[in-house]
Image (cartoon, rainbow, N blue to C red; front, side, top):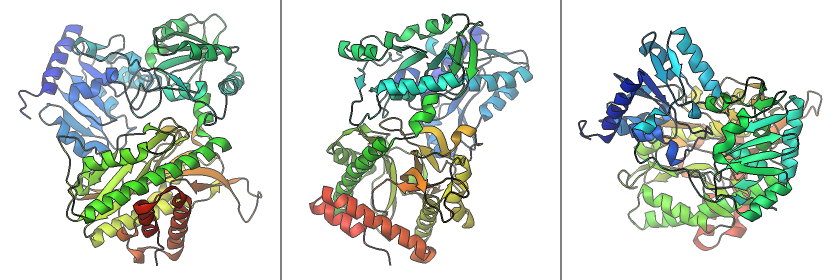
Length: 604
């Protein structure tokens, strides 16, 4: 790209004019919206609009002299390509949760100067950390203006898609019951009110769904729960009269989306407001009057929705069957085309997979954009093929496919690696070590209440023994027909917090990987359900938990080096493949059934 004509360089230049006019030295542009969502509606894609970087995570800082994008290793290759010609430098950070941009701002801003950020999209916890660092550096923090709006003439409007009800049998717990559980948690905190901004929490509490955010069946709203009722702040025209009546029957009032800040400001004397500092913005917290006492604690719904009920677990298992059957159909078609010499590319993988899933019962949409990366593209963990940049699948190597879907009865997320042509011994070693890591954690038995980050090293140990490492977490929580990434649990290097304790009913991914820049990438991912475990000692040492593997799809044994696997690991894999064949065979036929039987043959 010509550096003189890059639209992103021009936008940054225009933004600098605004900074100078406002007397601001630096602007922080987080990847966030007023709900602190992972996937953002177009209106709040300011970081992408300014920089051209399309990754789902990253923080942009623009000063009067420099501009820098902070991204972790999942995006380094992608960011280097997308930032070319923009004048924005890439700052490599160790993890997605790292806060190096704060230290960078503090050290690159003169004492007495001003750093600005839109308080409406800045998390409360993040604001507290940012203000503390800037105060120490003698830098002023300003949060009252959305300066990007001054240079974004065609900014998208708020999404207007309708909201709909998630109904039984898939919604097995009523809205009234969920509100009751939230109020019980409020009472334990001594709270009279609880304000919720995170859209997946709101969707779970209300048993409502929408399509305001790509891939996640959620809608933009705020929710204020009190001791007797609740108010849902949602866009005009998004609820029909029947849905408003159903909400009213459960004590849920409705109000305009824009009225939420004023409702906080109107809290009366003696009010005690429960807020989650990691899940509400600084701008909204600022509206709470001084006479209202604030209790900071994790949203009760964050913990409640992470623990799927027995009925929900049953629906998830059914959704996994539908998803697995779709994968059999896709892979049978793909391998037949490959054998016939038909031209294939990464974009076609996405299209064929989506077609196969769309024919399955309960399918609603994808749960994230499909990652299909051949060889070097697979080495970028969050790679996505586009019409302007994609690879042909031909020759020798590894094809990594990470995909998932939303079903009325669950959310799926699966990664597999497939051989194309001849697979080298080095590739097989990488795949086998990744599989060993996935198996190690999948087979772990541990005490109930173990903090989830403590389990991360179990999956990494086989890779570490081979001198290998990966830069992302090992696993994330998964919602129930909700966000494909949810908390509070995660298998990662995060500093453990009490609310990360593993509990029965949690659905979590296990996805170790290896990425060789410019060569190939490997990741194998299953979703698992946390279940009670039986131990030889019974309950003598307390309650123990284990994992039930939910994902149903073969792991291609042609990519494995048998000599690196222990007999017990091979036995687990063969048992898994027998289960996959048994569960999926009644739901596929013809070429898909033949493919399933072939790919689930025992490894000797």
